[in-house]
Amino acid sequence: SLSECLPDVEVSCHGGAKIRFGADSRAAEATLAVREQARVRSRSPDHVSKMGRRQVDLIIFDFDGVLVDTAEDIANAANFTLQYYGIPRVSVEVVRSHIGGGAEALMRELLREGHEDLLGEAAALFTTKYSECYDVRTSLFAGVREVLEHFLAAGKRMAIATNKVESLTNGLIRKLGL
Image (cartoon, rainbow, N blue to C red; front, top):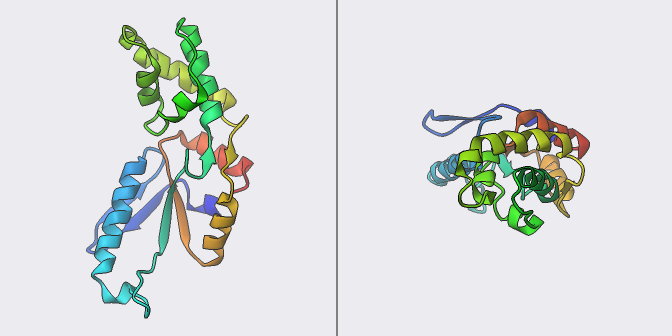
């Protein structure tokens, strides 16, 4: 199952480089690792099939916005936080456009000018509130289960790169049956 690849995955790249993915990893690090692995493998004849295509051994997915739609739950926690400080609510689409950089980056984008001093406290409040409602509306995007089952049946190793708190990620993986 996909959850067996979590929480810590170490990728060995050609030439001995090792990259570790875990609870504190960023999606950007995963992207760089995949690009490096592809670049190295593209020059290595033993990793090219007879048809000339590169073989992929490990597929690393971003979590929020790629596998699962977490926008409504994140927006609910963000709007709770904004209202706590007397700041007007924002739409789910506004929140969706800022997902991906973690709690502090999200709150930095959503706090209005003049509220920069609240950033640390607001990010902590958001994180607390999100941990209470992270699995209410979150769901897999259409077709994701089938894609993951296809890769699993094909013997591909899979992992998730996310900056979401590990316990919440694992909770969603269990709830969504990944």
